[in-house]
Length: 185
Image (tube, rainbow, N blue to C red; front, top):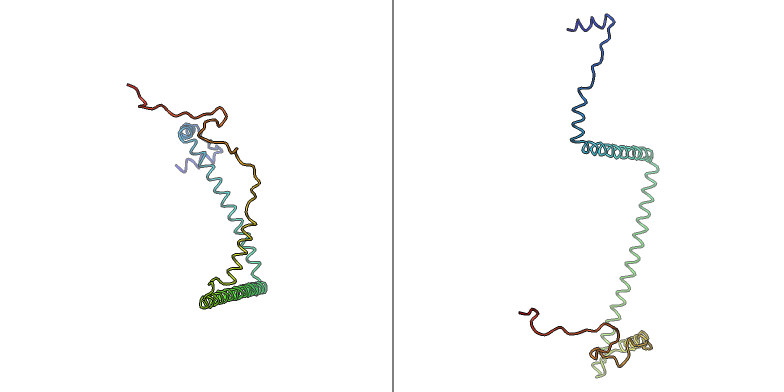
């Protein structure tokens, strides 16, 4: 068979392409059955390729940046700067903690002193409220009086209004329902 095919080509006859008409009916049947699925699959493959291209381009950019920034001097300099900033932040935190500790000690000392004063005044037979507590209560009273709302507001309804009298005005009036069973019979 190979010899006959070679002989046809040698004689100058070029083999002719067969007609692709036999492929058309199955393709049309496939697209009529699964056309929408094929369209969605094509769109999905397109979006997947776009996503992969974007990731590959960002990876290649980051790899070029990382290789160029691996200069030993710049790495050491960056680490030194990072360590200095960490040390500075730790010192600030330590200072705030010491300040808070001092404030807490002063508050505890004040409470202890007030308790001692209260105990001594109770031993003497005086009122056991300390001077500091009396001063605080007067300050609270003055501050609460200054926070009271003004009473110059107009009342919502006149003083002669009674909701049970029925003359509330307007067209809407409430009437009680009928007595007795709701269904007759």
